[in-house]
Each structure stands twice: as structure tokens, then as C-alpha cells.
Image 1 (spheres, rainbow, N blue to C red):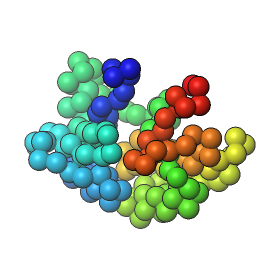
Image 2 (image 1 turned 90 degrees about the vertical axis):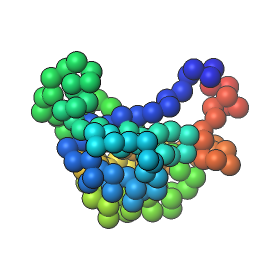
Image 3 (image 1 turned 180 degrees about the horizontal axis):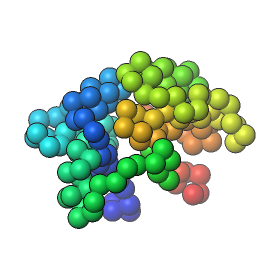
Length: 146
């Protein structure tokens, strides 16, 4: 089970300073581990890495190409209440995010909304009353038999 986790998420970005300021405004803590090409931000149990888009493509041995608005991927932050979803969504917009879908009650009984960061990376903010959060804000579905 210890290997079934995401330790670090790397986002290709156009401007390291702009993206770093954006995520710092959302409570990610910039670390000293980076350099001129990469910024590492500490979150709760996850590190967010910001890498220049062309440099990231080169690191993977690929050519950088224009990115579509929808990339078939979203990152998600589950929160304890609907009010928390609204609060973080508003903070993201103030920091420079683009509203994709404002928080709303959804068919499965919770709240969900989407924003795109300054580089178009899609984030979902959700409150799911069926996914209880522990004291650190982590989802643990093992108690639900998942």
C-alpha cells in the first residue's frame, strides 16, 4: 500500500515566478529545494513542482506543443464543507485563476467547482459528504470498504 500514492505532481508552466506566487497564495509553501528551472512547493503530504514548460518537455524527451484547454486531467482538493469550497475558490480567483465551473451542488449530493490556474491546469474543489476527511484533511476510503 505504501507505493500506491502520489508524492509529487509536476506542472509545466510558462512563468515560474507567476505560478509560484499563485500557488503560494493558495497556501502552498515554497521551499529552498528548487533552482532557476524548477520550484518546489510543499503541501499537506504532496509536493507540487513547477517546471518551465519547454524544460519539462525536454526532460521527458518530448517536443513542447501548444496545450489544449482540456487536457484530460484534473487535480482535486476535497474540503470539509461547502463553505470551504467557496472560500478556496474565491482565493484562487483572487490569485489569478480562471473560473471554469463555479461551485455548485452536484447530482451525487456534494459540492463541486473547477478553476484553471494561470497556465490552464484544471483543479476541482469539492466537498463530498460521503468521503469523510481525517484530522489532516485526507480521504480514507478503506473505512467505506472501497
